[in-house]
Image 1 (cartoon, rainbow, N blue to C red):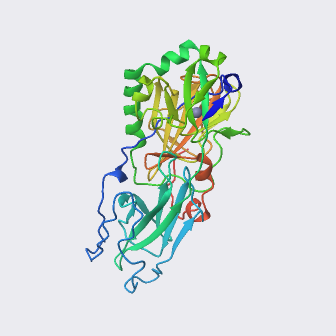
Image 2: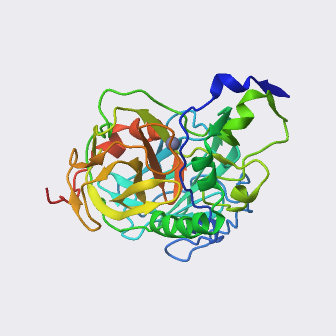
Image 3: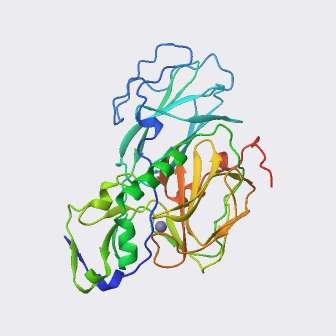
Length: 363
Ligand SMILES: [Zn+2]
């Protein structure tokens, strides 16, 4: 049992983000090869059991070497796994992760799969597969565990009241989940990603946050080992109705002065602009092929839904709207509807970062 001195963490930054557990890859359980040939991999739910031998003889596809490049070498819960099947030339590539369909894309060097490893999913060893005419390629990937820590957040009565607006929170969550789960076909960006706010420290991805009234900060509060957050914010609205509301923090909080410029870290299209109970003034950018970024608690929004953004375009100014106890930017990265650590995303390897034929975005 950990006992946290209440005063020490009082009024730390409190903001939230929405995740999406109903992502598509959770629903499809069987993937067949493009030729209908005999891959009988029915990969049990939860993954981890290779049902087919590894690479079969690749004879039909020139330059298809069966080589899969994985990055990083040691994937960690909360991070991202980047996987390139070199030379695979399917126009409609099919991939799977944990036995469920995973969106993947044809790129100049083969087929690229980007696997989100959200903090809310367990560590373990799972199966990644690529289908191709010459037979399925499979890899066993071990995702290491990580302790994201826990925090107490004390809210004044006005902010605490926001947490308790359960029906409004649920409505907002449905809207945001819907936006974050969309998959547009075209990759809109290329090159290195920048930070959305300059020169700032960012922290907090994956931490479990428990919300109390400010009046509770005068007493010592103990978090029992069994106290768990109820998913990421907005996913399970019962969290707001719980005795101790709690959600996992699904992005990073970047310290910045009020009205600091917030800039698009890469090109994309504005998928949503809204004002929500907990996330405040909010912008979501769709970068294409299942990559989305979210910006919460903005003071001012400077873009509209549908705007095409080039990298570095100013989208708003830092604020403290919604469930925020001081000005900061909450920055979230979502892959196929699931949150990941933005730092892990930005650390993408060159085979992801530099693609020969991105769609250019208007300035
Ligand atoms: Zn935050």
